[in-house]
Amino acid sequence: MKVPSLLIAATMLVPTHAATPPPPNMALRWNDALLQSVRTGTLGPPHVARALAIMHTCAYDAWAAYDTVAVGTRLGASLRRPPAEHTRANRNEAISYAAHAAAVDLYPAGRASFDALMRELGYDPADTSSTPAGIGARACSAVLTYRHSDGSNQLGGYADTTGYQPVNAPMKVSQPLAALNDPSRWQPLTFVNKAGVEVTPPFLAPHWGGVASFSGQARDLADAVPRAALYGSAEYQQQAAEIVQTTGALTDRHKAISGYWSDGPSSETPPGHWSLLARMVSQRDRHTLDQDVKMYFALSNAVMDAGIASWETKRDNDSARPITAIRHLYKGTTIRTWDGRDIDGATWTPYQPSTFPTPPFGEHVSGHSTFSAAAARVLKRFTGSDYFGASAVVAKGSSTVEPGVSPAQDVTLRWHTFTEAADQAGQSRRYGGIHFRDGDLRGRALGAEVGQAAWDRASAYWTGAAS
Image 1: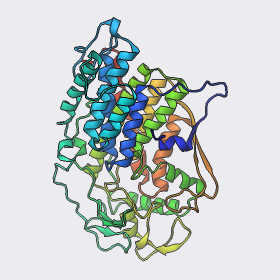
Image 2: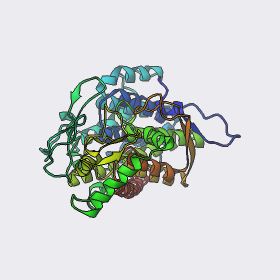
Image 3: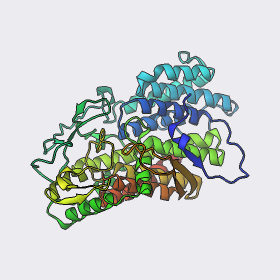
Image 4: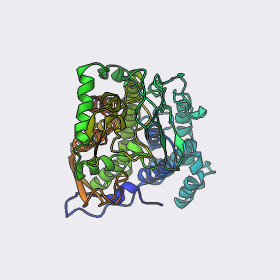
């Protein structure tokens, strides 16, 4: 199986006396398998977050049948098996059949690789006649039935169900900004993608705020977030000026941070990125299967709720991205850009690949910030400490914006705590010129609240307290 891409560049900072990590358990194997389909697929960040949550919930619900107190999310304790059957082999089998069913449902194009993993593990993907296999199939079937009508419109190809239409006409990124109907509102962009095709992506999943939340609190938490600055206010002008100043003075380190956390097309996306960081925690702390099932159950559902909450806020505000605000405010004004040139502000571009200049959805709040803060909160609660102790090396010349040029030398990023990593992920979007300060900071605050609510709910399931 392909090595997770993030792990090639990232190295855990562990004590020198630490033993070699144990082989990946079943929770890690299926997480890796789903992430490979994420990388080759086309689903956006909130969809990926939901997919990870569904698979790990199916795995958790199957595992719960072989625990003495944990209850499943859909069928409660009705699948509970006698203590004599609570073996690792039975857990592995039940988890694998549940995860396989979820993976095939979410990424049907990956069925061949999912089937191959089942056979590698010693299971026939078509045979659910054994008790553990049947438990896994039943547990996941209940989760999938629920999620097929959760507001995501998965069975309709995730198409928008709200009738959203942008108020601004598309901007062709290669040309100066023309007239705007409302400088406060989101604007589609037209650009040439990696395939050499001119595209104008629509607002991604404007209906996502209506997806059923794991904790039941995501939408309420989102609705309490302060609104984005409006055109004509001092705040609107100040936030644009800050991005102009920041991107005009980027160092190699700033650019490396932007690139490391970018998680754009053909990547794990932000939810998958944190799933890989959690894998590091599992290896660092030598987790058991039981620990990883619970950690990923809580983490993935927190990140799914972060996607729901941030997209509810994005759609509610429908706010302009920096490329729109800056081109409108600085048209006819000379400003410094990230490559050291002085340009007309009407042609400003963020520090992003020209083939994906800005993600296609509203600015406020930052999804990266919300996803990351939610994940950091869960990992902090699960491990009992904010300590992370990890690092990643951004290789010389590896920038997708300035390939072969930036960074001039290898740059090592280090995070003492989970909070530091989450904060850097949020800051990276400001270095990249695609989020404002408020969008970042409000997203961090929202993510922490969402993560705490999901943690409370998840831990109630595995302690048997949830109904």
